[in-house]
Amino acid sequence: MKKLTGNGLWESSRMMLPEHRERSVQLHKQTDRLAKLELMEEELQELFGRLKSSMSNTLEVTVSVFCEYGRMKYTGIVSGLDPRQQLVKLEWLGDWKLIDFKDIIGVEFSAERY
Image (tube, rainbow, N blue to C red; front, side, top):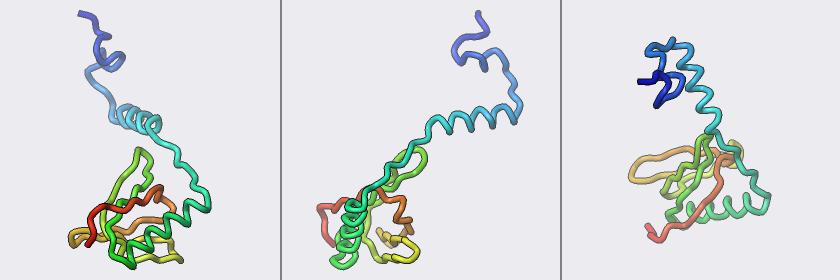
């Protein structure tokens, strides 16, 4: 049986130093990172308008948030907007989350209304 089958180089060595494993994991994460798309001023104003509408009319929205390794989606009602700190407070089922406005890449209204 060949030593270098299946997992390639790491298959032949059954023991790996913690430092080597940590570095391997870091390299793998760096290759999976995504670049954030920059939104235009008009798109930012539209997103802010939807968030404001959700807060004033208690409409449920789905907020898409950029993170290094993909996109996260949160659904709820906007209960607070802080323009100075650029934070959005999103509530759902008795829980809440603060979202940084610069990380928001999309806001969609849900079909249901509270």
